[in-house]
Image (cartoon, rainbow, N blue to C red; front, side, top):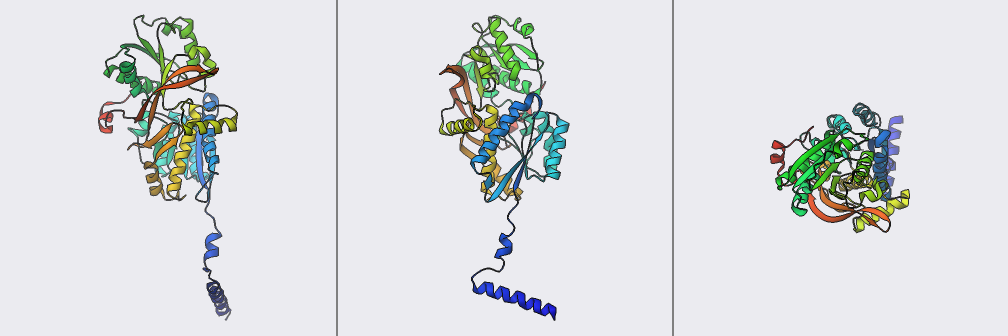
Length: 410
């Protein structure tokens, strides 16, 4: 009898709700809002990589804040972890993010060695990885897989058009190169060397220097007097020291200096007048005169009381790509196939760096900007002097042709 009474009460409630024009299930459906979308953000937050990772993280969160940290009614939570720039630590932290924090997506990562260490793991667990800095070519070439995307760059991506441009536009025929002696340094420099030589130039000397080199005299003193220019890939304090010593040796006025990352906005003001006239290539410049970049610059300066860097733009654009894909699936990040397809289909015209999309190997396709350091209004900037649009990591080759013959190694 009690069971029959219970059933009658339920039936009466259903009938009453129906007469009121309400679904009897409306309350149970709305009573459990969707859980937040959790994003793991592992990067190099202690040691030499800390300022770069902080800027990248700040840019990432700046964009999320602009959209209310919400997509399709679901809150966005970002959980950051410090990899210390160590692959084994990075893998441990990503395991924690995936298995303990149950993140839906992993993003960030400054260091390529860490990216290599975690890539196989996230694939095994079917967690999308959206890299916003680590540039090792192989991540989206030989080791590419459907769960790994990169919104920043591949190491040799900008070097390819730059080498060709230097030969054809500047008419230089003899170049000396100097690069940091680790895998990324070789990818940056070898990419430049390859296209410079294919365009008719000759690399007459090359130097490889340990990271943290204090005295570049052993290299600068051996530069041949008949070279047209010098191409350098260094970053941070190494770049500051090299450029200072280059001028002290009287080379600045004799042999033009070209480079990659050596006049990054993170260090440009520290280099000062020594940087004026240096020509570099990159996929972004704070001096880009576009509405999207001006808005980004203004928002970042308002939030952090200083101008952004390339690393901040990497984070900001990476977050924008992520949110566009989440909007496309109406926040249903659990639909992994749909989310991955939405990422692959991304085409944006209004990022701070300009139009972007992904190639078939899921690396960003974007413009390469040829830049010259100038002092404007008392401030140093990488003024854009030429734009090369739609540059992919494979440059003028097909992926198949490129991967048969190319691997820039130490």
